[in-house]
Image (cartoon, rainbow, N blue to C red; front, top):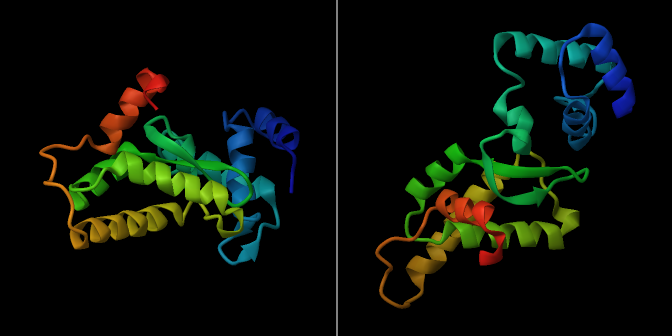
Length: 171
């Protein structure tokens, strides 16, 4: 695999504006695999990213994982050591699917579990499925256990993390 400096040099020569660190992190988290095959020519992968940049403002969101500007919430440690954060759109989807649970708390628990279990690290591609399953189990636990009367309105994860981003001392 190339170093970040190798990718920076190549991207500079081509004038493509690709973030070399993002590129290396993206491919490192996937073990430098393209599908089921090892990446043979990383320069060809850079050219693929150039094509995506020409069609849009950058690589697809699912390629970026936690690097997108609209990502919020706790950072999850991935295989290879990179981090991933959920997008606002993902949080909105989960808020609709699981309205009765405290999503911010559940996502914080899931992030802590991931950090405490590095042998069971997820990939960026697998994180949405992992979190959907986590939140689904949390909702099932809440439905099956008797507890206090339901709260009228729990803040969505996006609302809770917006408060956290404004003032981290709330934690």
